Amino acid sequence: IKSPFGSIMGKGGKGKAGRITKVWTAPKKWESSKGKSQGKSKGKGGGHWVWVDEAPKVYKTKGKGKGKGVKGGKAKGKGKRRAAPLTSEFWNKKVEAEGRKEVGETVLPGVISRYSVKQGYGFIRPDSPQGLPKAVKKKMNEAEAAAEAEGKEVKEKGLLYFRKPDVNHQEGFKLTDGTPVTFRLYVDNLGAGALDVSMA
Image (cartoon, rainbow, N blue to C red; front, side, top):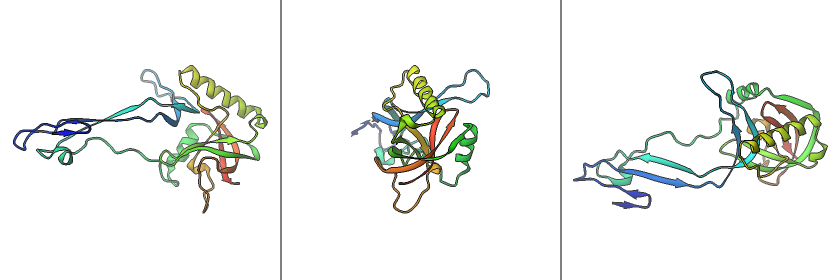
């Protein structure tokens, strides 16, 4: 039997479904690059809050159905992960693990550059990047340089990372591209970011 994703064979309705290969191409994705730990040490991997291109991914599933083709098969593997709930302890643990330190109490203006509802994080473009504190600009430059050294293409420089819990959620506040916001600053082991993100 032919399908858009490959061929499935069976005899007398008892044959096992063949392997189906689905190819999905995502040319761009916002993500933090993660470092790799070496050996069996328990050290924490690093990373950098930057926007990079991602290579296309190939997802494979195996059918288990008998003589029922694609609909009869049962795919193995877990479903796609979504961001943890806003009240999950997951977010607090990440903040602690990354050594977050708030930088002053100054509230700054900017716009949403990109936000992924599925992943629960995004980036803000400050209105005046040259006016950011030296400690913040240093962290941003270090993160961008480290990502490029790893062979990753930084699509836009001068952006500040933020997560879903860093946002003051309210009715009518949509984190769409170009939305004006205000925010405060922090630095951590991965770079620099924004917190207390509010509707401007």
